[in-house]
Length: 188
Image 1 (cartoon, rainbow, N blue to C red):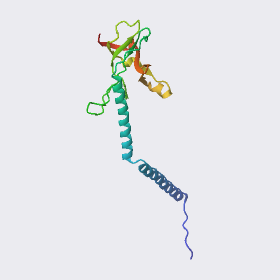
Image 2 (cartoon, rainbow, N blue to C red; image 1 turned 30 degrees about the horizontal axis):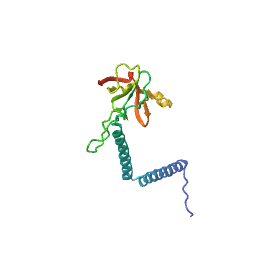
Image 3 (cartoon, one colour; image 1 turned 30 degrees about the vertical axis):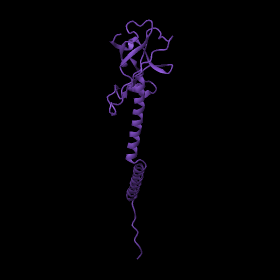
Image 4 (cartoon, one colour; image 1 turned 135 degrees about the vertical axis):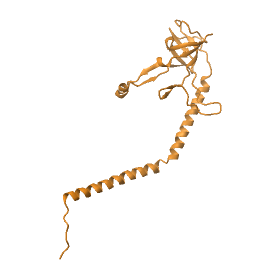
């Protein structure tokens, strides 16, 4: 007698093909997960993120220190109509002991870099109440603009706060209208 050959049915062939396919998929996913573990060890990513955050905080701290200086407008420069030129003081990023502050003024998820209270450095001829040297509070909500670069932004009705800056002889000033003020906090 010869060898017996067992006939395979179509169902057995399909089951075998599915097993091979699932083993192949497992091999592929395990390969990619193993590769990702090797290529991006968690400590390296954490160190990179920490270094980037420290560098960003250092730059923001330098900008904060620079923004504390109140530089008068150059002679002959005057805002037009009801425009105000304000100091561009930034929010503090670190405490005296060097800890990072996470409590800066927030716009939803975004952080607003500038303080609400600013000093008027120049006032146009039609400005009625805020004079040079007056401390005012900015209404950042009036500076909110809708984003419409993509259809997704239009549908989600995304918006952001754009602070209008003007640079005069290397010094940044916030250029806003009298309408963008909440109130005057300290009159000169």
